[in-house]
Image (tube, rainbow, N blue to C red; front, side, top):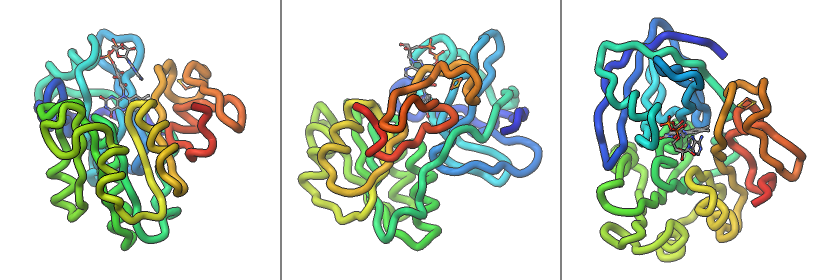
Amino acid sequence: MQKRIFNIEANDPVARDTFRIVLRTDGDVSVRSGQFVDIALPGFYLRRPISVSDRLPDGVVLYYKVVGEGTRAMAAMRPGAQLELLLPLGSGFHPERCREAALLVGGGLGAAPLYLLAKELLAAGKAATAVLGFNRADEICLTEEFRALGVPVLIATLDGSVGTKGFVTDAIAAAQPTFDRFYSCGPLPMMKAVCAALDAPGEVSLEERMGCGAGFCYGCSVQTRGGARRVCADGPVFDKEEVLW
Ligand SMILES: Cc1cc2nc3c(=O)[nH]c(=O)nc-3n(C[C@H](O)[C@H](O)[C@H](O)COP(=O)(O)OP(=O)(O)OC[C@H]3O[C@@H](n4cnc5c(N)ncnc54)[C@H](O)[C@@H]3O)c2cc1C
Ligand code: FES
């Protein structure tokens, strides 16, 4: 884990209340899909954890939703400004555990870390299909980025404005994609439903409010079948069997 200064190269709105930020630093950046960065924002005591959506040779790409004061302050930052990041944090997804074909199931900005996972799977010669769920059309993002990789994308919207009307599980039931392992990131009820519906091994990325973000304070502990685990250090990615819903 390192503390490093990054320059903001771009910080643009891409969907309703949603921003894509490109951050570059001096030297190589080493980070895997499912890992996150913890961002120090000027004037805020606690860092804000954000998943890595893409890795650049000298940087990272993140997607974030404006939900409170910290993310609002981040959205106001302009290219050329600097941010201090702790990275890489947490365990990543395990693309090597997929035999041939993966199903990537994202809810909202849960799509973001699945994008880097898709790149890792494709680089290892495996296939991937993405199923992405959103509340409404103006929240949709990242779908064209997945398609540009050659990854088929199924969309579900709660209001039915795009794709299947309903949940990601409805889109999966309708399309019946072939896969031997699934990976999911998004709201807890969505991941619970996905784990219940899919008869295959899978991994989920959990979210908790964080203190230190680095394994010291136990503020992000969740109960799992293996006992109390820290989302920041033991996770955020867990096997589906480990999670006590
Ligand atoms: C491992 C991890 C990865 C994450 N990746 C992303 C990402 O890729 N993109 C993204 O937009 N967000 C992500 N988040 C959530 C993000 O950290 C919070 O939205 C952010 O810290 C909120 O900061 P704020 O100051 O704007 O809001 P605050 O003022 O701190 O909170 C505003 C609202 O958001 C809720 N909230 C804040 N933090 C969390 C959290 N960690 N989990 C659930 N609810 C929270 C609060 O309960 C409150 O209702 C991730 C969180 C974790 C733990
Ligand atoms: S946030 Fe401190 S241990 Fe996870």
